[in-house]
Every structure is written in C-alpha cells, then in structure tokens.
Image (cartoon, rainbow, N blue to C red):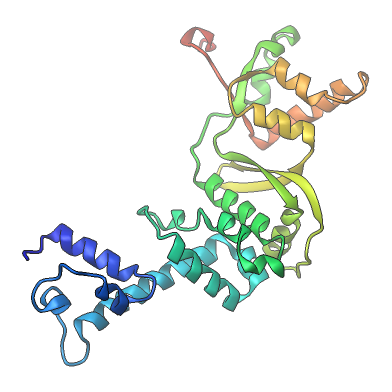
Length: 280
C-alpha cells in the first residue's frame, strides 16, 4: 500500500488519540504497509517506531490535561489532582477533541460530570464546571459596541421606550442548582472553599474589555437579559423588570438595574436599518 501524507497524518492521529494507547491502536489498523509502523516511522536501537509515537501520545494527553486544568481551576481544586486526572482520562476517551484549538477540548466536561460517579461526593461540581466553562467561552466571544449612558441621556424621555437594544455577545445566563459561584470566588481569592448550599439560582457571566465577571441575578433580571439575547425595545425590557413589583417601586428598580447594565457594559444598541442610526 502506498501511503500519502494525508493517510499518514490520519494514522498518527488515530494512534496518538487511541484510548488504550498506541499498541492497542495498532492492533486495530488493518491497512498498514509491509513492515508495519516501522515502514512509516523511523526507529532505532533506543526507541522503536511504536515507542516514538507513544511519546507523542503521552505529550498529547498531558497537554490536554494541563489545558483543562487552566480552564477548570476550581473544579481541579475541589476534586483534587488524582480525581481530576482520572476524570480527564475518562472524558477524553468519550470526547476526543475535534477542533484545532485546545480551548475547545473541555466544552463537554460539565455535561460529562452530570453523569459521573464523582457527583456522589461532589454533587455541585457539574454546576461549578458549567460556570468555569462559561467564563472561558465568554472570554473568547466577539466584541460589540456598547450602549453608553450618554447616548441614552441625549434622548428625550419619551424616546427611551422605542430604543432597540440587545445583550452583548460576550455574555451568558446560567441556570444552576447549587450556589457554585461561591466556590469559584473562594478559589479565585485563594481562600478555603466550602461546599455550597443547594438552591436554584441564575448566574450572569459577561466580559468588558478583557475582564470576565459573574454574579447571581434575580428572576426578573434573568428574564429581561434572556429576552435581550435578541433585539428588543427598551419598553418591553421595562415590563419584564417590573413584574411583581409595586407600582411605586418599579420605576426606581428599573432605573437602578439599567444603570448597572450600562456601567457593566452589558448592552449594545441595535439598529434595524441605516436610517435608524444616528447621524454623525
């Protein structure tokens, strides 16, 4: 059989990512040339062709392991080195990376943890990993021009309701069953962490410039921000923020929440056409 470069690349990928190692991976290859792997990869008296490829397989695993430690530092702190190592080993067997970037390797880890035996001792760990994954994804999300307070203040009060806006791409709203943000804050601050209480909560994660922040939010704010995943008029946002509030309390609550969004850089103004855009 004549091996082309693409064939060799595919073979090496299969061997390097073989769940049980290069030797077992070779056992499943039925189209190798005469001489086997040695005909494709040089070996010598010190290292055989198989041993050389095995070095790359180990490097591949440990590079992914280190990358996942960087993406999930709190999950690592909670589980400990040995548990985390075994978790990643099992995870990569089921979820081989399919994308060029190492950053994508851990995107299924939170879901994997929801069915993992480690949850028996760490029932909150899947929510913690979900939060850490959101931090990574938000950090890598696209930029957007922000809606500034000065832009709103330049409008007449009666014009505010018609302003179209949406949440910035670098943001996410999470549904959690545990107060996992408390654990992440403790780990980030290098404090001792305690198992969080089980309580349904919503967590907002967003980025302004290069800094990712997160905080727990109430149901009205969560609903309004979820609605802002698509272009929405400010009047509709106000209706959601005012749900369940006394008429006398709603205006101030809306002002406070919207002022906070502007200060945090959470919203961008949306224009449906060039005619909607302000003239320069």
